[in-house]
Each structure stands twice: as structure tokens, then as C-alpha cells.
Image (cartoon, rainbow, N blue to C red):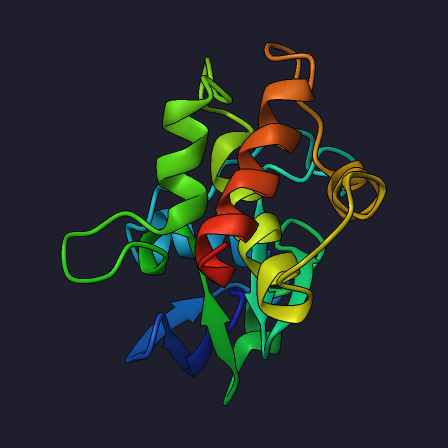
Length: 161
């Protein structure tokens, strides 16, 4: 029986240097959850269709179920665990709570990461832009309106409007 050689990965996750060993075909979502014990990133579809596993890889929004863990070598990964700072929720997290924009929680981490990325790129998005940006994040519970309202409210809060 042939033994699979593990790959050593040195990366930065949420601003902290991290190292792990992974199988050559292991995806980033699996490595985050199982190798680094960062279970906030959810695994929904494993095909890049639901957005539950959304993370930032060098500031680019990606479905971590479609990225090989080894591709994180020398790169920056930002996950849901890095969104709140110093014990304070990010405005998008707070507004999702206030607008009841979350229910079962499977989609929530991906929605938060994607919405935060949107607001960093465009702090004053229109409703249409928010809907377009979050189109890759599927939610079976909320019907999206509350999520969209929460993102728009967070954008307003961030701008100080």
C-alpha cells in the first residue's frame, strides 16, 4: 500500500501565523475545521454553490471547499473567527442579530465574511449591489430580505450615517 505524503503548510489565519499538515487533495475548508479546529467555517455543499464556507484568501472572497489547503501556503486567510475584534461584534454581525437576519446558522459565517468583504470594498452599496454580491450565499431559512436590510444597516453604521 502506498503511503500518501503530507504537505506542510505555513500560512496566516486571521492575522496569526499558523502551520498544519494536510493531504495533497484536502480542501481548505476541511483543513480549517479539522486541522486548525476553526469550526466557524461551515461545509454546506462541497461544490462551491452555497457560500457557507466563504473565506478571504489574500483579500479575495473564495469558497474554501474549492481551494486546496496547500494553496494557503504563504498566503493570508481570513475566516469568521477573525471578524469580531476585541470581544466586540463587527457591525454586520450586530445588524444581523438586530434584524433577525440569521436562523439556523449554517449560512451565517459565509454571509458575514462576504458582507464584510463587500463593505470593505464598497462602504455605500445599493440594495441591488448587496443582493448581487451575496448571490453566492444560499440561505434556506430567512428569505434574504432581513440579511439585505442588515447589510445596508451595517453599511450605514460603518459610514457613520
